[in-house]
Image (spheres, rainbow, N blue to C red):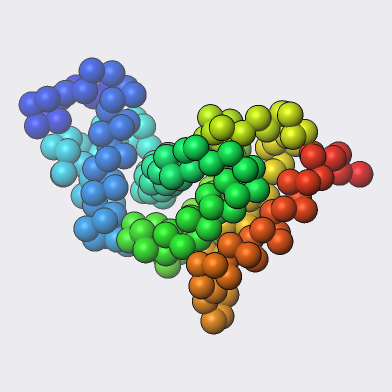
Length: 204
């Protein structure tokens, strides 16, 4: 790991170095957008050389993808906080999905990413296994006993993937005209309620 530079405060290990690089990339993305976020810009911000970044990220695209993962992870945590204490499983999922659909377009960083050539890559990352696992963990820390409802193992992963794909499609291609908050939640109950009622029935 490169310990020289870092403006006189080198990281303690590779994990901290990687986090600092991602945090710097997030700052650059918010200020300048994806097109002007390069490894050179991130290196200058941190007071290190590009070869130091190459030890952790091979390309700008790889670094931007990692930064997008970090941003999406932050949103997952916020949704978990928002749904604390909700005991009805359908209402918990409806509120979590609705919140993301309503708020993600106002998230400057993710909006800029989705409006560029990075969109396809970022969109795919929304439904990758690590994103599914992160969202599943959030749900499993809620007040709902998902296993008692028939949702565990691969079935739970399928449910989370379905919800992420629902969010993905409605953020990238919003309805016209836009639904009101009540209309959106009514629509989501119709989409999510029957799926949840299937109790993780196997797909034949």
